[in-house]
Image (tube, rainbow, N blue to C red; front, side, top):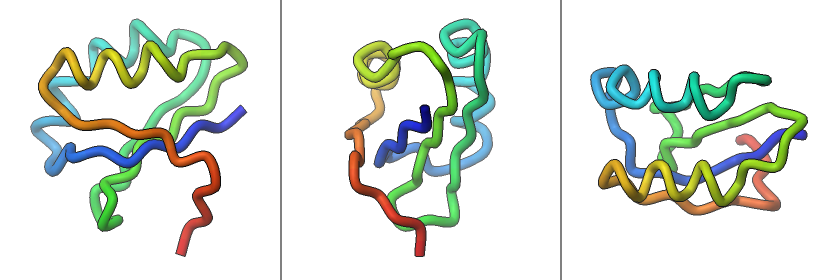
Length: 74
């Protein structure tokens, strides 16, 4: 399953700081940020239900995060 989130993660250094947490949380799957998108999209591909954990992780780290259930890339 692919999950898509709108975030306020703005640059590569913020992604690098979050990487260890995401690598641990998404041990089975992949994740990536699209910082060029106006919504700073986070895509997570995993077979495990992780929506609440992903949102919680970003909130704990001081970022905003909202799942976009009907997201269609431009």
